[in-house]
Length: 283
Image (cartoon, rainbow, N blue to C red; front, side):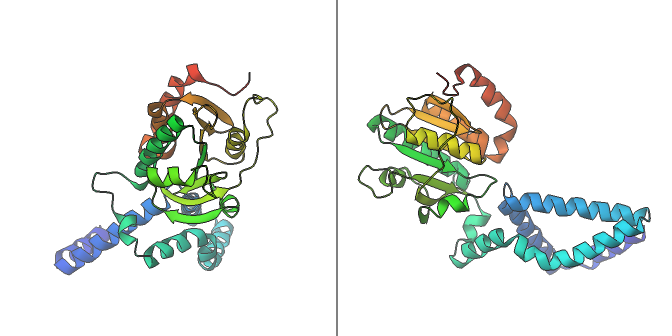
């Protein structure tokens, strides 16, 4: 009761400036949570919250040794946090330094997020490249960062567009032989070298692009899209499995299910639809 009485006094005596101050802080915290969502930082934050809950419980039931160890751990952890979250902090500061603050905070005018826009542009590019039989290999980064892969290519950091994607994979382009990596809805790098699959059961008619796609999906949680240069067929590799002969609409459903947070709960439904077309390239 004393807490609520003090809280009511603060609300009662507060001014419009205080309300604006609280609203701004809440707004920034909300978008900070969105910024780290589906990144390595999100899992680290969950771990910290669990440790805080354990420390609170230990203090409540007088588990003094556990409480003492966790208190010292948190004291050291405050110094270690900038090191642990270095990739996310660096990415945030880079976006602020490049004047991209609004891109971090707001959606597009039509309601699309960055990843929604990247998916729509990828679909358009794949449809065109499939018709012209232009080989392509695109990697959508998810929870696991692919820093070692992007180091083998050329950093781009550009907003995706169907024209840019087609230009990257144009046969006479210097980057067309490698893979393009998309990070957080942007083209992060191109011309990257991917690991080949070690699966001996893959069909012999699969070329280097498809084997690289399967190999990348075996070694990470990335979603890899392939357009065949020989047949123009569109394929997707996820978790070491290769889905072949996909039409643009099916490709869209897979990418939205795997990459858009709001549709994660539809994943089982999507894969059940595709169960009849399952192809692990074992012919």
